[in-house]
Each structure stands twice: as structure tokens, then as C-alpha cells.
Amino acid sequence: MRSLHQRLSGSIAELETIATTSKIIAINVALLADQIHTDREASTAAIKVVAREIQRMSDNSSAGLAGLEGILEDIRLLSQTINLAGRQRMLSQRVMKLHLIGRLRAVDSAPLHDAITDFGRALSQLRQCRLNTDTINAALGSVAQVWDAFLVALRRDDLDRAIEFNERVLQEVHLVVQAYESLAGNRPAPVADRKRRVDPPALADGARPVHAA
Image (cartoon, rainbow, N blue to C red; front, side):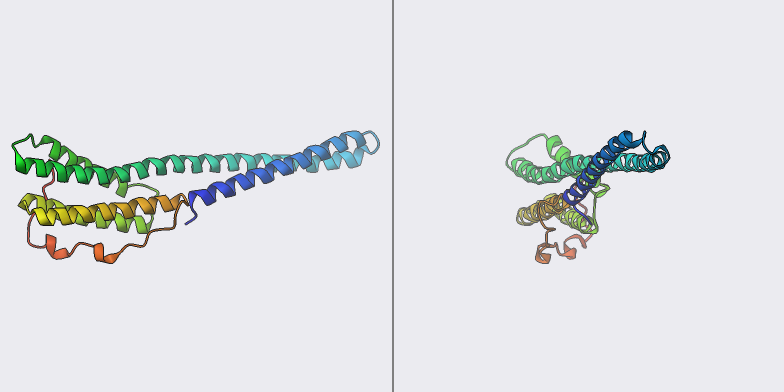
């Protein structure tokens, strides 16, 4: 898949070619205008050729501008998506922080459930992004798996496991952010460390993660 940087560079190059060709056509039209009085028949035929070329260049310009608009829209979407993915790191840390505070003293549980809900909603939004590649979808699947394991640990109040899985969530989300950044051509696609993956038995004992309603 071509990066947005490559697509943008290609689109700009096409428009530059169109601009150069248009300039050449304009010069030819000026020469024809000078010759039209000396050889009307030949000039008429040449003008028809130039007219067809101008029409072709006009069509190419319209297509090039439409393609450029599409690329710019993808760039805007990618920027928003990278910000959304990066925010997941903050939310996962916020959930851990609020849980720890709740262990120390009685506090309103609403902020904790709100943070859990926000993470889940954003993860769902990321998984539906039309820019996703197979690599990104796989990375988001890993985030979802480790996130659920983290929530199971919170429900059990297993602090050691919760801290471990919270760290894994941060690692997996970081890979997602890198994968999105690679779409822009800013960096190569990340290579996931398979050792970071959560063991399936962590969720195989029937425990349910604590998703907010």
C-alpha cells in the first residue's frame, strides 16, 4: 500500500506535468495565431488538434484535483486517527490510576467507568477506520485482547496482574500508533514483539471484564 506521502508526491507530479503541457499548448496556440493568415487550412487543422489536447488536459486536471482532494481528506482522517489512538494510552493509565485511588479511599466510581467506556468506544471507532490495513487490524485485535485481560484483573482486584496488563496495553497501543504513522510515510511499519501478547488462559476461566454499562 502506498503511503500518503507517496500518493501526495505522485499527485503533485501529475499536476506539474499538466501545467508544463498546458504551457507548451499555449505557446503553440500563439504560433498558430501568427500563421493563420498565411495558411488558413493547415492552421484550422492544427487548431482542432490543439483544442482536443486542451480538452484532454482539462479532464486530467479535474481528475488530478479530485485525487488531491481525496488524499488531503485521508491526511486529515489519519491525523485524527493517530490522535485518537494516542489518547488510548492516556485512558489506560487513567483507568489504572482511578482504580488505585479507589483502593485507598471511598471515591465516586463514575470517572473510572467513564474512562473504561471511553477506551472501549475509541477502540471500536479505530477498528472501523477505512484506512486500516491488515497489520493495523491485527494490532487493534491485540489491544482488545490485552485490554480485556486488564479489566479482568481489575475486577479481581489482582493488582500485580493489572499493572502487568496495563503495561502491555501501553505497548500494544504504541504499536498501533506506529502502524498509523507508517501510513503517512513517517516511519516504517512496526514489527510486533510476539512476547508481548497476552496468554489466552488469562481470559479462559470464565471471568468477565468490567465493562461500564
